[in-house]
Structure formats: C-alpha cells, structure tokens
Length: 465
Image (cartoon, rainbow, N blue to C red; front, side):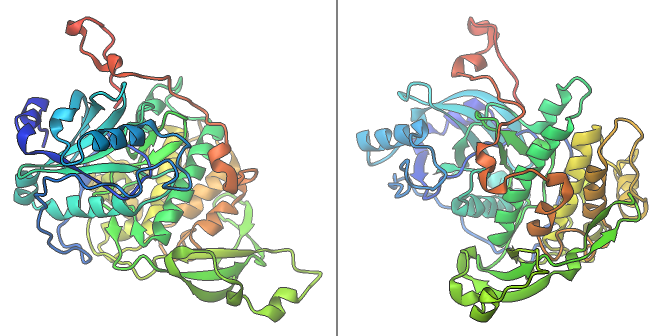
C-alpha cells in the first residue's frame, strides 16, 4: 500500500489534525525484509475508525510535558503556534509533502514540513483505511496508534498528532535524519559495526525493550531496519504494528538479589551468573513505578552480612501476555513462534541476540536459501559463529544465552533486562546515563532542501531509508 503524495493531497478538504497527549520520538522506515503476521491475535478487538474533523488541544504539548523532552522542542512550538492561529481546525493544506521516506506493510511514510514553521519537519505515516479493512490490517493500525499514544521514553516514538479523514489515517511523528541501522551498517567499511558501536546500540535497545515490557507490550519486530538514529545519534525503535499489547499496563515486579553463583557456558567456556538462582521477593508496582519502602521488609533492610556482595534489583516482565500468532520477520523469528507453541516477552530477547549477531557479522545466523529453510534452521540448527571477523568472547557468550531455543532457558526470560544488563559484555555501561553517552555516529544536519528533486534546481536529493 503506497499512496502517492497527489492522492493524499486530493483529500485536503476533509483532513484535520487531532493533537495527542504523548511525546516520545521517531519516524518509520522502509522494511527491506519480509514481515509476516496472522490475524488470530488473542488481545485484539475490532475498533471503528474516527472521522473527527476538529482540532483538539494537546495537554502535553509543551517542553515540560515529558521528563526526557528537550527544554525547547521546535516541533511542539510550531504546532502550538499553528493551533493558536487557527484553533478550530488544522488541515492537510498546512503540511508540505516533501519526499517519500519508505513504505511498509500497512502504510507509507512521508517527510512533511509544517508550513510557516521555519523548516520544522515531521514523518507522516499515511494509511489507506479502506485498504486496511480489505486486507484485515485495521486492528494492527489501531494497536500501533494505541501504543504510540502511551509511550514516554527517550528511545521510543514521540507521537505529535494523529490525522483522520474518511479515507486516510495518519500518524505524525518525529523525523530521524540518521536513517536506520541497516543502511548505516551497509555504509560501514566492512558492512559491520565494531564492538563499541554494537555495545552502544544494543544497550539502548535493551532499555527500550525493558520499558515496553514493563508497560505490558511485546515488541516482536526488532531488526536493524526498525532502529532509527535521531539527530543526536541516539536510537529510536519504530514500527509497532506487529506488537502485542496487554490488557493492563500494570506489571508484576520482583525484588531480586544477585547472590548467584557462577556457572560455565558449554559453548564458550566462559563463566557467567546463573539467572535462575536469584533470590526474589514479589510486590505489585502500579504502572511500574519504583516500589515504596513498604515493599521491603524492614528487618531485612537493616540486616548486614559480611558475605553479601549483591544488590537489590527491580524486575518487571509482562509474564501474563501470551500470543499464538505467527508474526515477525523470517530471519528474526524465535523458535517458539515458528513451532506455534505460543510466545511471550522472551521473543524480544531472542531478536536482540539476532540483532547483535547481524551487527557484528553482517548476516543473520539462521538464514537459509528460502523462507522454509530459514524457519527449519531456526528450530533445528545449532548456533555457529564465523571465524572472521574476530568478536570478543563476552559478546559471543551473551548471544549464546539470548539465542537459547528453549525460551525458559533464554537469558531475559525470567529476570528480563536485569540479567542482561549484568552480563560482562555490558561492563562499563552507565545504564542511568545512557542519554549522556557519546554515540558512535552523529548524522549530519538536514533540511527540506536535501529532499528537493534534482529537476527542481538543487541536485541534492538524498535517500535516507
């Protein structure tokens, strides 16, 4: 489904913008590998499309709306100014379509400029409502919109506004000028990343997945094409139409103590913590907020032991969110999805292992000649590492534990991101200050002029996706 700019523009008179109550950051990108899905999602329900044509003020549209928002967001400023000038409606005629960034399974993404905003650009994901219904994709579009509306994280999308007409549905999000990690990897000298770059991108993906799991969301489509690079070099996950959203955003949290012994990994002969030997104590955390003091037993808090070298950690996973659907990208599918035995949040940690493998080696570990052989390899073939390039043992050890075919033995399946963060590969990572870490790549600044076609006088048209 690839609506052209002229088709969208024909519907100008009926289009208006509804501002949202959220503010995280991203855009959507071209999917270069095949995604698959089945319609029998257990958590979905039919929803009728909205045909509203009024401008609704965004209560969160300010620089202080979200904790991670910059002190001055020119995009929010431009939207507020347009609203103040025309509080009734804001139509498509206020957007200038500059370039099609890419297309996916349920829509196309355009770079748009808000007129009169001094070059403020957005990414607009445009979906044809009739085609969504015809192809039974309307539930997926609805779920993606619902997820974007509740996200509040620096490595996840910021939804500025939604647009609805009888024909079109549009999500207005932040444009990421760095493109996606698939394109960036292809531009590397050996089409792969070095250890420092993989550690940087993987660590930010880990905390983004951790947040999604704490919100009761399973991402299910991690791959380099869906990891965008913002203007500051930090990542942004995108494309949530394959995600699974639980009925409740309340997670069950556990307090865990890492007093666990070291065990040897038979694949790498390295030693690591046994994630199943953590001591745990459960309490319920509404919306995943850090627990009150009452969640800790006072006597245990005051008790001192000379042989205790561990720390208390908070772990939250949506363990009650399960699906039987066959969704994802073939090379990234977890064995439990392929076998049809049902899956939960552990599939995201499998895809993290595939993601790291591709970033290091430039290929995925189980790819076959065709899709059928790829799926067979995922279920039956043992994980192998090429002799070249040289990859550190700690990285191989982490990938081995993430790519356990049995989801109950997979790192992250029980302790979530907490176990992964403690792995030696991430030694030295300051998880609390990831937003302050220096990125391995900072994209050059772009303006709308970079996307003006050559026949209009500039000759500098750029493909970012």
